Amino acid sequence: MTLLVILEHDRGDLAEASREAMTAGRSLAEQMGDDLHAVLIGEGADHLTDEAAELGAQTVHVVTHDILTDYGPDAWAESVRQLADEIDAAAVLAVGTDRGNEVMAQLAARTDLPFVANCVSVDASDDEGWSMTRLQWGGSLLEDSTIEAERKLVSIGHHAVVASDALAPGAGTVEEFEPELDGSHAVTIIKDRAVLSQGVTLSTAPVVVSGGRGVGSADGFGILEELADLLSGRVGCSRAVTNNGWRPHADQVGQTGTRIAPEIYIATGISGAIQHWVGAMASKRILAINTDPEANMVAKADYAVIGDLHKIVPAVTAEIKRRKGST
Amino acid sequence: MRILVCVKRVPAPGAKINVTTDGQAVETAHLGFTTSPHEECAVEEAVQITERMGGEVTVLTVGPAEAEEQLRYAASVGCHNLVLVPTDGLALDPQRTAAIITETVGGLEADGGGFDLILFGNESADSGGFQVGVRVAHALGRPIVNGIKGIDVEDDHIVARRAVDAGFEVYELPRPAVLGVKEGINLPRYPTMKGRLASKKAEMVSQPIDAENGGQVMVRLHRPAETVKETVMLGDSEEAAPAIVDLLEEIGVLQ
Ligand SMILES: Cc1cc2nc3c(=O)[nH]c(=O)nc-3n(C[C@H](O)[C@H](O)[C@H](O)COP(=O)(O)OP(=O)(O)OC[C@H]3O[C@@H](n4cnc5c(N)ncnc54)[C@H](O)[C@@H]3O)c2cc1C
Image (cartoon, rainbow over all chains, first blue to last red; front, side, top):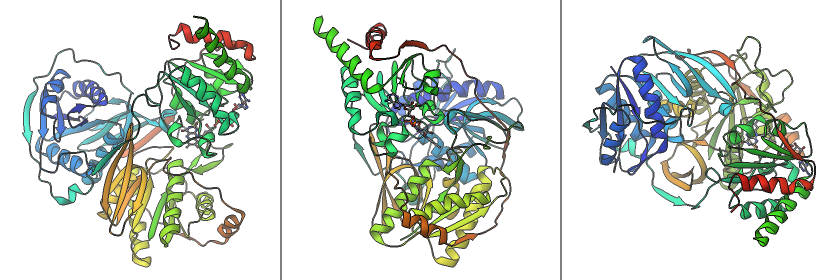
């Protein structure tokens, strides 16, 4: 039997998440005592077969079809369904990115099998039923679950495993697969793309300077922008701020916003509700600036200053300028 | 336009999420409840579309009797028809929830005509199974794309934009279609006094429908292990600025 891992790529660029998928796949296949297969779908994936082998794939399936140029949930899931039948896969795994979970859900719907999203650990030692721990509340809560199904469908939470290289590469035998697809599978394929921002985004910025309700107004963010600019960082905010229309939703950090992982997160006037925290907890260091010493953000931060952000933030900016000026 | 929005009632915890002693549910004794944020935006989007193009919005929830609160809230911001499928507080697995919604939609469409658009939240805020909308769409034989942060309704198709890190992917779906919406597609309005009053009188249909369990069984909920660390206090006023800048220099973010 085999474990089939779905690799994500965009016209030939392997997604970082796919390295996580293969890392999780290797340990799962070992538990199952099964072969590890990988599947690459769509145009431009041919040259990724070596990389898949490096990551431990015994067999790499390259799925091609006229309509498989760009990503589309129906076309991808239908391809995986047919391939999984063909190779009699015992389980199919993806990483819980937007695409990963979408393809798995489509696959689950097509086969009427259970799908367990965003697992952080999976016990696959018993063929009959697997038990797993998965994320709820965007990671604020864990759920232990079991599934029984002839084919297990799971996704691994994005960033829940640290991607690593295989101890030994897999054989990487390349198999071509052409699924039977028709126009109905093409209706959800990407038609066009629009690039909005280039350069550092909130999710990749090395410094994020965030404001919450304590900032008090849209104009109040001026002092945070000035500080963020000096640090080549980005401005973030809490949901209280976006709900008030002070900042666009693209700036929101948290469960329903962006997950950030900067070198330092400067959180000002933010209480640290659990749904905000899950978006910020991957930050290397957190500095909280808050009038309330009891605020959750203060308790969880590495560093804190208790006081009014409207005084402290401009003082930090002035101090940076002073030091820059004197060197 | 006939639009259906499927919403979920979820607790609104603050600094911590506590679990009941039997591990079966979130401890909600001292919590308020809300509509999952993605779905709150789906409701707003549906109302905006019908304001532009005419038509009506139906809101459906599968949940406890108390979920009437979330339906009435949706009515207070402009939704027209309210449908509750009561569950007696059971936590349903995703396959069962999807089967219940599919059957309910079938009944609603047989009575009132087909929906041009069905909106779901991208994932529920609590259990986050990432699949109910997709299962329903598939059972109904309609296309669905998730992660949507922009919708344009055209005569015979729907343009949907999905947010990716640096921009958008654009999809074009034939009508009728289903979309999984994400927070940020719009800024939901607050109810007006008039809206609130109207929502009290809005008719709510209660439709008990059930379905078979799916294959996933929840065993228990628990909180992730927390690493408690000491917070280093850098000061209690703007006098702390030099200490903060020292820190920024030390970690190398100040060139
Ligand atoms: C399902 C769900 C999902 C959610 N998703 C998100 C999400 O993605 N992101 C998110 O942020 N929230 C999210 N929330 C909302 C979250 O629960 C909180 O309501 C929100 O984060 C609070 O924002 P805040 O900290 O800015 O406001 P508050 O909680 O009101 O905190 C304001 C803070 O500012 C401090 N303060 C006030 N004045 C000053 C001053 N002059 N100087 C310094 N400090 C000051 C106060 O002491 C307080 O700590 C979600 C909620 C739910 C139910």
